[in-house]
Image 1: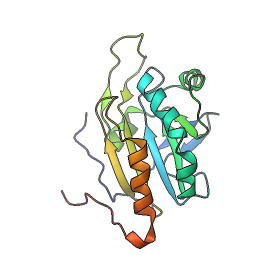
Image 2: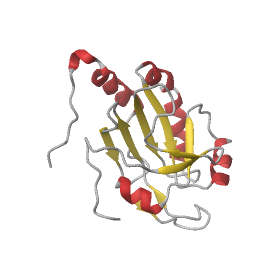
Image 3: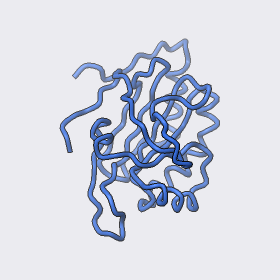
Length: 177
């Protein structure tokens, strides 16, 4: 892994990935009327914890939308792998694929090699999550190096409710290192 670390308050980088229908999409650009965006980076179809986490996030999609936050997820899987994975998923938010090693390095995520060909056929990103605010800056960043280390959706959404409340005037945290 590179020693690059994406910083909170940084402008989310221009990263082009593929949508489920193989259209190029800028990962940080909102595809809805929402002013904020949550980008969930997941390991891929080979990861049962990712499947469970994505399905759990579906339960929070409407609450996020009500807070003006668009939800998407992305992996390094191929189009074929994503289509196979969708058979195990019960999500209505956008799923993207074809995240490259260079793009993973730009995001500063941990990258793993498959343990065997049975797992998958390419290097993949370990879990990460980015909340992009209305200015295109990273409000929250969470980067993990293991599949079981991710933010609890209920706590995350509760925290976002607090941040999104204008009365709280909550700043971006972790900008000093």
